Picture 1: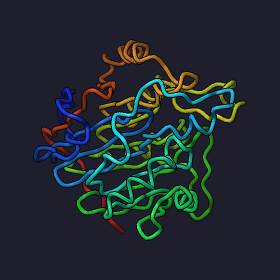
Picture 2: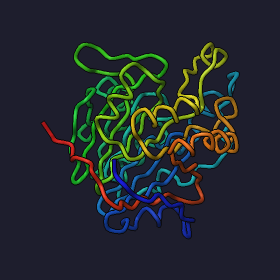
Picture 3: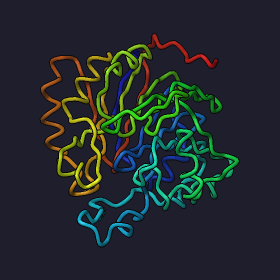
Picture 4: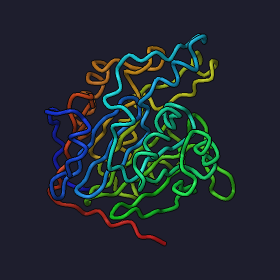
Length: 299
C-alpha cells in the first residue's frame, strides 16, 4: 500500500480553474463533485467519475414520491469541464450516468472517452455518449488510457449481476495514476470475496458510498449501498489505509449527515483507518512518501 499524505486544501478559484492546473509531480488531486462524483487530477490526466452535474432527476421525478431535489448545488456545470481524458460511469442509474452531463462533456472534450460496463453501452449512447469514444469493459478487464491504468471490478448494488462472460451491470474502478492506486466502488454492498479482491490490488485510497440501505428505499426502487461501518470494515479487511466516503448530501431521502459520518469514523481511528470527508469547497491532495504498489499489467 502506498505511503502518502492526504491533505485537504481550500479551493481558491472556481473549480474549472483548479482542474485546468496539473497536480504537482507525483501527486493526485481529488475533487468531490457531489453524490458519487469525483474528478481525479494528476500531472498529465483528468479523469471524471460519476458526474451528476444537472437537474435531470429533479425533472424526471417532479411528480414522484421522492422528488430528487438537490440539497447542494453542483460545483461545476457540465459545459465548464475542459481537458477531460475520460468519464467513468460504473452503471446506468442517472445519478451516475447523467443524461444532462455525459453528452455535453464528450461534445466539448473531443479526446474524452466514456468508459462503462459493456452492458451499459447502449444506455450511454442514448444519453449522448459518442459511439466511437465509448469503451465497454467486462469484469476484471484492464484498460490503459495514456499514463492511467484502469481495471473494472464487479460491484453489487445490493446484488451481484455478472453473466458468464464477465459482463456486469454494476461495476467499480481501480484507477492507478501517478503511482497512487484508488478504488471507486460505484454503488456497492459487501459481497463474498470483495475484501480479498481488493487486498490483492494494494489499494491506497477507497472512495466508497456510505448512505446505507433499507426496506423503504428498496420498496420504492432505490437499491442501497454500504453503511458507514461496512465501508470502514471493508477498508480494514482489504488493508486500505484511507477512506473517502461519499453518496451523501444530495437527496434528502438517500443521505446521511456529515457529522454522523465524522463521529462514526472516529471509532476506527485507533484501528489505524484514516479518512477525509469531502466537500465541494476544498479538495484532497495525495502525495506519496513511498510505495510498494506493483503496476497493473496489461494482458
